[in-house]
Length: 496
Image (cartoon, rainbow, N blue to C red; front, side, top):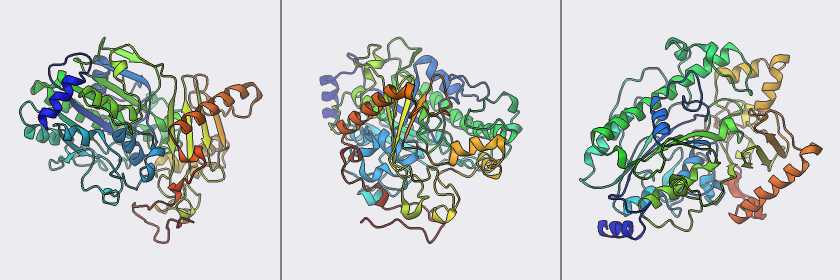
């Protein structure tokens, strides 16, 4: 098998003749929006590792997850496909059917050592899809630490990476997934202030009220981002010590946006736009660049395979980033595409909130297939598997603030943005309205733009065989739900 691998490297050399196939270190946080790194302009959060990777590689300013929900986003990253092509994997708390090839499994077959620590593909039940192991690689979870704050996972992610490196054979290329559970909720209340962070310096997103509770909540979120970043820094140091850093593709990103209302589980930018920086001195020309074009995280799978000299399977339809590495993009990247099906099962009968979006440099257009449904889950906790109101949104001080003050003038707008029903179409001018607060759909002066983007979205969905765009059976509402049911009466409706 090793001979086959090296034959393929010679047959399909990435970026010319590279002495050895590159290693891959894929670092992914859990619930982090684009804006919240130092390199992307945040004045409070300290992300020295991300900033270094960005400074010494490429910083992507318009990177988008394929779905603003953990399992589907991770499935898209692993398979190089949008979620509407992945059957059950389009839902969270589901499975990833074995028939969908993943980059890590293909790299392993070609001779790579593969492994992961922390949160790999998750959450769900892989056995239901015919898999007996996590598609991110062999699990390394034994090393533990005392986390600096409550609610953080006690996994020593960086030490587990060291354990993985110790068992890699000499001259064997490797691919490792370092996935923290931070900054997923919960947070320790007041952790940010106790680290000396100044709430007055927080940039409050336009979708939230500028309130002390929100500022403090964001500071607590920053603390967990920094924990992730420190793990990345330790991993980089381990690679330097092993003399492997410059022949390693280092990727730092997140699966989707921040765990706040109208962010996570929402197609708008706070939910779908993520940080992305990639470092690879031996494979990236003119390092230190910023790439402004829209890209999806599903592009990473074909990128890794091409860099390793492997043939990308036909089912991986995402575009590789290799031309960007070479600083001569072969195709103009003008759009990213984002989708949503069922998140946490918080509507009667297990129904989701199916929606699709196209994001360009200036606009976001969203098509909501079922506008009669509550986008954040039903207001009544009776219809939620988690047994909380608006259960698609994680419980938090910010969520409670909005719900407790929903009838007050200063809060009603923000409450509606987070929880109210939405029209079938949404259109936002993101350069003029970065918070995507003012819906322009239906306004005469934007009619042509709306029509054009709707057509482009439909064309892409049809071309990539989205069942909803083709008028075919779309069974996501009826797939099994393998998550924890705190509401014992809740269940998924049988398929009619």
